[in-house]
Image: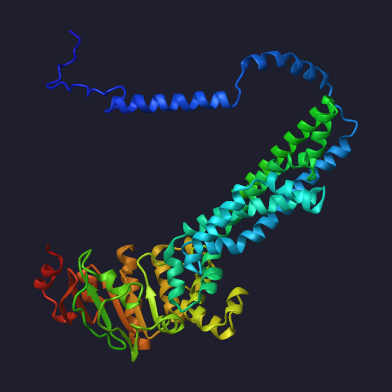
Length: 271
Length: 228
């Protein structure tokens, strides 16, 4: 005897239909997805054969990249610091532009309620144009160098920062703001006295996060002549000096990792 | 939602507003402060008619009433003292608010208000580190600092333990007497209403079904208010 008593009632497992309740729709969606994939693969010229024939060249370059060329290490490090500085100044510029816009774009505190959607659209335009594209324009307008990069980073991040800030502001509990307004305080008083103390840590954390992102995106701005380590990166590729390129990539990795850690540590202390 | 609700609260009097959830207590409070608009009727703070006011005049009329909320609505990251000073926001110029420079008289007023509710020792403690009962006492101090002649308290003890609830209500009753403040407080516990209020008004489905001194409240009223 097993010693197990037979249960008085046995439940039947409910049957799960394997492709949902509407098989025709499921197959149609599946086919549509496959078709879109096929079109995309054709558009991008996906060709494994070319990758295969290019591999030896890559391997050859990789072999030439060792040992890393450290002859100009001091210049490269200075350029890396230039990239960090571009991100610092660019993000600060973005913060200054974002500050008034996030108030306009936040539905719960906007002083002119019909302006909140247009403000949002304008921010989406700023956010939609990449720092890289802005930098391209500014290199043409103000000349080569990191200043063009700073302007590009500043404009693009102002859109991102203002959008994230206005969302953080909209997520604030309405009660304390209402209570402050009911004591007879005007909007400016409510914003400065009741809202800012509440959201300041979140806003600062968002700015730090965008700064960290900007360090990463600034590494390529030099490719269009907008300063920083990217300029050296492009020179090395153009001259096929792979040992130097390898050094640059290592510097970027160290820099980005360090900035990520610093930013993460600061944000942890804020929240 | 509300229909034909009419009553007065005299200076120094505590009126309890009783009603089951959904009876219209919160709607009534929102109408009184114009956070919601009534279709008809009028609201007076003293001589001042509230309905029809707008902009700056509405804002200044509102500042005549101190509000107490169920969720306290303190600014979480500011100290108890800063929260009480918020009661002075309507009385001082904007630049002083931006720079956080409150005049000495206002600071004195705020400290006295904190002292009155027994929270002076916690003046510099952050609001979100205080217990619920302590936060509600700070909120009362904010209303005191406002020097309002009317206090509207919407379910002020609904989130508090019985001990804190009693202390909050007795402070409300005492300040009404001391400063001749008219206090309207909504509650859903009959025993608290009878113990701390002078008069009881009952709402049911948006209508007033009782308005009489707390002493003549009867069991029949209790059933009328809370039985579906």
